[in-house]
Image (cartoon, rainbow, N blue to C red; front, side, top):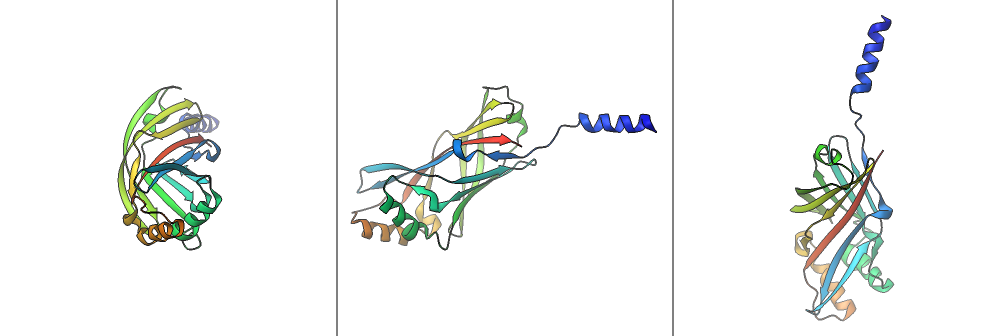
Length: 191
């Protein structure tokens, strides 16, 4: 009986441990570019992100819309209130299914290009995108995923047209582009 117990324990220890991966908010970034009056583009970002990749590869990222940061407090407040309506829609979500094996098998410093279908949920609307990403294994417990090309979100896909018009009027702006490029640098840590 003792031999059987020892063999079972050895078999269990030999199985690969399945761990979840969590987003390192301090080291990660999602940024977007807004263009107004036809030729003035600026880069903005969200300061608070939450994310997890389960042991089955289900990846979910939650962006707190209230954390939008443009460098101008009044503009941030306009975005929160007029565009995102954070009192009704507190966050945006991005989800996908990813095969972690090829990433976790990478040696530190090695990279892998990924093409993944993503679902973006914002203001009760969902839209799918094909994302070009680059995964880099940083060390035994961390990897990074960056966008090789920005995702171009069309604001009408998320029922943001009225919010854009309200922003335009509030800021006295001639026009605001309805297409917004979004880029990401995401670092995940194993726990």
